[in-house]
Length: 163
Image (cartoon, rainbow, N blue to C red; front, side, top):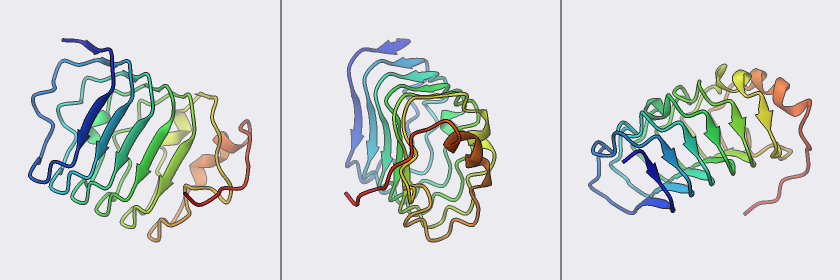
C-alpha cells in the first residue's frame, strides 16, 4: 500500500516502541496524529512518507528523541505540530520538508536545543508563525532559532494565544 486516504491515528499505545510495519506508505492523504505513545522511541516505518495531506501532529511521545523516520517528508499539507515530546532533542529528519500548508507549532519540547537548518529549506508556506512564536514559547531548552528568519519575512505574524 502506497497511500492511505483517511486519517491515521497512532494514539495511546503505552508499550509501542516503533512504527515498523508501516513501510511502503508514501502518501497520507488525511491527517496524521502520533500522540501519547510513551515508549515510542523512533518514527522508523514512516521513512518512505513524502506527503501528509492534513496536519501532522506529533504530541506527548515521551521517549521520542528525533524525527529521522520522517526524512523523506516534503509536504505537510495542513501544518506541523510538535508538542510535549519530552526527550525530543532534535528536529533532524525534517530536512526534506519544503512545503507547510498551515501553522508551524513547536512547544513544550524541553530537551529541544536547536531547530538547526531544517527550516531553511522550506520554500512554500501558507500558514503563520505565531508571535511570540509558539516555536520558542515553552521550549525551555531551545537555544537558537536563527534559521527561522527566512520564514517570518513572508508570513503573516500574529500574537499567539494559549490553547
